[in-house]
Length: 452
Image (tube, rainbow, N blue to C red):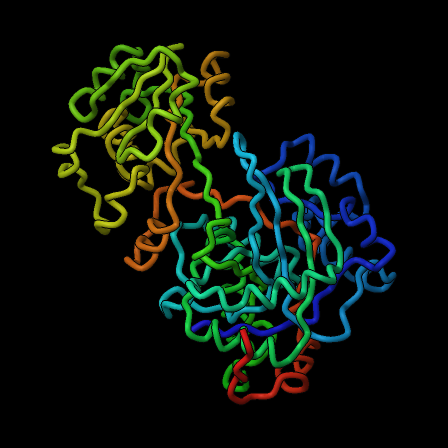
């Protein structure tokens, strides 16, 4: 199953690490355009490596990386290790503080067909090419993708907790409201035990499908160049990943609501009135008017195939008629057909609005994906959208079931919260990394048993 390796991480120099808040950057889908502009204004912020700008972004990132390495802005740890990464956060309306526990490592970049790393969503080829081009020019990984393994015995968490007694640094993430803490595990016996546990596990890719496929594309290109001389142990065979335990209750998936910017009568068709749209929903859904739009999330919570609808300043609970589900005609697995979001995309977008099939729906500019319930209502009230469809979150059990079925979910089905940060830890897959880990530090052999 999954092969993991420690890495000699690259990090900001100690003097800069003391103010790490100024240099980390969040993923693009958690910040506004104004916040991104502020990040770019800092000449040492990691965004210049993670999402470089200019006419030749990959070339600019390579030049910046080489300059930072030469000037000591970034330094490489002397010994390889696994990097414990904890994220503390709260959710709106809850007093509980969650702590998502995980660790960053290098995982072998497996092709999807190998069935070791499993995906749950499709990717856009242009975005994959961008990520692969950046990786080819820099051979440097600026942010870990997020993977999930399942360990119901929680064997590894005790070792992560011990590492966290001596953190390397931490940051208060103003973009997501999380506190991120980094530590390192460098005990060879402990690391080999981590390797043994993951060797019996599959990994579900939670977040970062484009970056992961960029790594696959880069590996294929390097393999073609190396030919028969490739050993399989070259650094370019590996990908930087943050692994968390799918059995943990601190793993949270937030809902992503659908905002309908228009209500077309099929592609390019005339706009439907509110009454016509409701009439189109009638054969498939029970439609219940509600007094308060603010109650929609609570009213649909935990109910199968139930959604909130905010249309023309009025709120409705809509729920699929059970007998209608048999009409769901997409060629996919039973696990995908059972999802709330599949029901919504088929019966609302396809049947009611005439957008035929997942490909047409992904390409349609008339839908926006919004995580904030309040923003959904506000944008409808301001006339920026015709309707908002409020959804429940996808469960971890549903993600696992879909991945093991070999299918993918509708677009924007999951939002694992919080996201990892760029710039907290960097990884290199350059050729000169070879030998530092695989041959010199950790030798082959059975992994030792460790006390609990």
